[in-house]
View 1 (cartoon, rainbow, N blue to C red):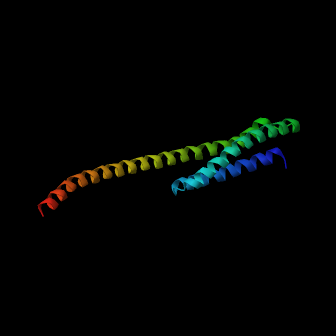
View 2 (view 1 turned 90 degrees about the vertical axis):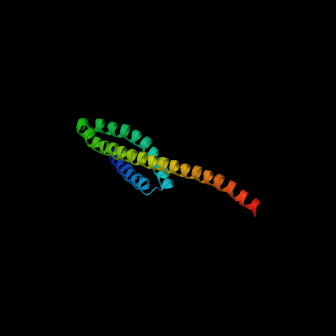
View 3 (view 1 turned 90 degrees about the horizontal axis):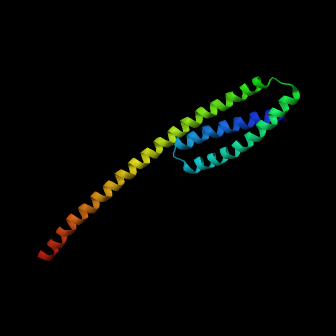
Amino acid sequence: MSAENELLLAYREWHRLAHAEAKAIRTRNWDLLADCQLAIKDFQGMVSQLTIQARQEWASAGCNLAEKEQHVHVFVNDLIEITRRNQTLLQAAKTAARDRLDQLGDAGRNLKSLQRSYGGLTSSWSAAA
């Protein structure tokens, strides 16, 4: 298989992983998200190497390099857009988690306050009985 074909297959797989990453964020499946991010990191290195090899193939074959690069940039631009959307989704999930944590912290503090208030009354009532 040519380096160009391998490069395009790698981009397609990266694209699939980016969509799986979005699904993981939406479903709050953090294990899947971590797996997707590790796989994407692997593909980034692979794509770099395949890009170098494909460029060498194109130069050796006398291909129109600008046309070939433009074809690859379609994949790159799409991945950039998906990544931006995923970052926005992840930021929204983090914000929601922080808000929920703040709510739970407030509830815990209120509960402790109530326990102190009623704890003092219960002791007084026990002593009077």
